[in-house]
Length: 247
Image 1 (tube, rainbow, N blue to C red):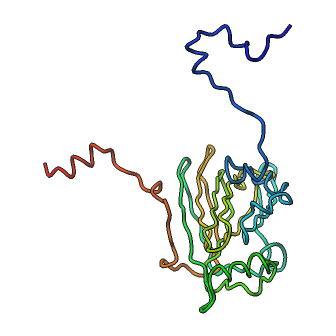
Image 2 (image 1 turned 60 degrees about the vertical axis):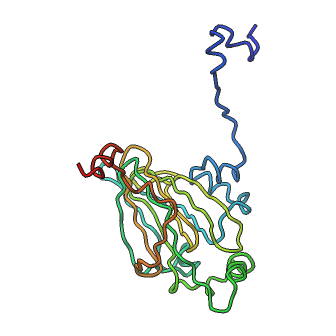
Image 3 (image 1 turned 180 degrees about the vertical axis):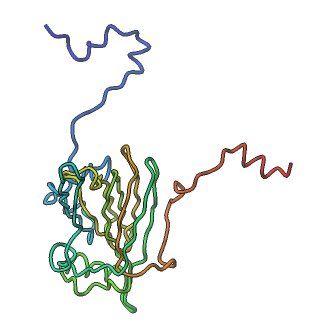
């Protein structure tokens, strides 16, 4: 007869039993995990229909197929100008760039200012654009605000998005994307609207190489940062104290 679960630790000292913890392996609802512990992007895409109330309006995530070439490497496309998500939403980036993040490093949160037409309250503008008429892509001002399109060539990225637009529900999305060097169901690209803060962490065993396009060319005035102290490498406290001592 198997012992009752609550008695299975009776062979440990009482002091050890008092410190004991066990992990709960049951899975919470997708929406809870998306805003909490996070999802693999394949889980997120597969469960998209049940995530409407947790999804940040304007965010687009679409899968990318990586073709492995035996003995040579791999090949993958981002998209084509006349098909796919970027074509559907009318977003054609004006600038492309790349960045490498060493393993265990992080960036963000970064945020770009959304354009609000003069004389319109921000909350009314965002509700019209993203809640009442979410498919009216022609009404977006891609040329007056920075939208980002991101995908990854190597490594694994944990991405966190936070909606900070006035009048919209503050939602958090946390998910993991694999670079092309790890072909599979977790290869994807992300479209991030202005007003949505975004942070990246390089996780896994290799450096993260990111490629990203922007709807406008770089403008340093539009590079806002929130809680980005992780990007700085502080000196040891005793070094700082020594340098500041004047000795």
